[in-house]
Image 1: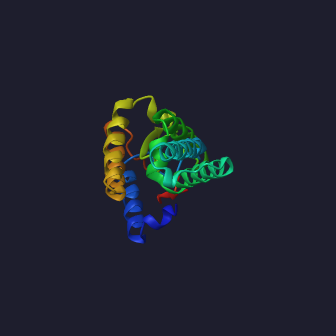
Image 2 (image 1 turned 30 degrees about the horizontal axis):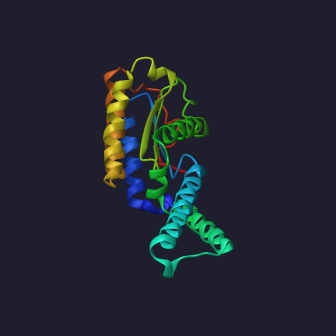
Image 3 (image 1 turned 45 degrees about the vertical axis):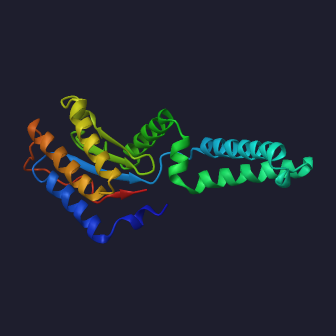
Length: 216
């Protein structure tokens, strides 16, 4: 998946401007991050292979019983037919995201997304602010999942339900293919929450983390 191609220069500039605007009145840094996929999910390929191979074998049995003209009696041919069907099933799951998504349990997607978000928090150095006031808005495109992760200076005074509302709204925008609009709203709301909690900008405030969208 070429995730970068989903965003025009205009889109990226809009997001960067939204970050700048959200940070203009607060002593905090907001970092938007989007990844194509949080896990490899090879289990989905195995499942698809098993289902396709089993279905092929079932068809062979049905043809043998009810449609002799299409029946296969050679054991070697049966083996190869099931093998090819299984391979095609695995390939389909590898290439077709909706199919792969269907074959993965939600708990596996949640776990992979949480781990990838935690790694991104460190990789993008969201923790690297003077007052530990960084916020990361993390989007995993394949899973259609969003995580808002705040550093210790913010998380100790902002309740999780505030981030949950942002997550729900942004996730809905992603499902409707309106990522830019959703991100703009999420960034604005993060800025509003920090203002409400007293994280006002100070005279010596500097922009500690760049404003652009990180695409991985």
